[in-house]
Length: 113
Image (cartoon, rainbow, N blue to C red; front, side, top):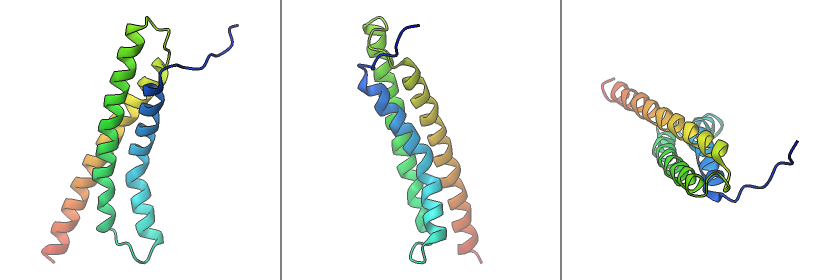
C-alpha cells in the first residue's frame, strides 16, 4: 500500500476551501441574525452574494486544478479535492439562489403588509 503523497496542486485545495465557505456563508449569516440583536434577518441577506461569489470562485479554481492535473497526467494530484470543490461550489450557488429568492419574497411580504 502506497503512502499518501502531498498534492502539488494548490488550486484543488483552494477550490475545496472556497466551496466549503460558499456552503457555510448563508447559514452562518442566518445564525448570526438569530444570535445577534444588532443584525436583522433582512441584513443577513448579505450572505447570499458572498455565497455566490465563493461558489463561482470554487468552480473556477476546480476547473484550474482539473486542467493542471490533466496537463501533468495526474502527477499533480488533487482530482478528488477539485471534484469536491466543484460539487460544493455548485451547492453554494444553489443555496445563494434559493436564499436570494426567499429574501426577495420576504421583502415583498414586509413591504405590502
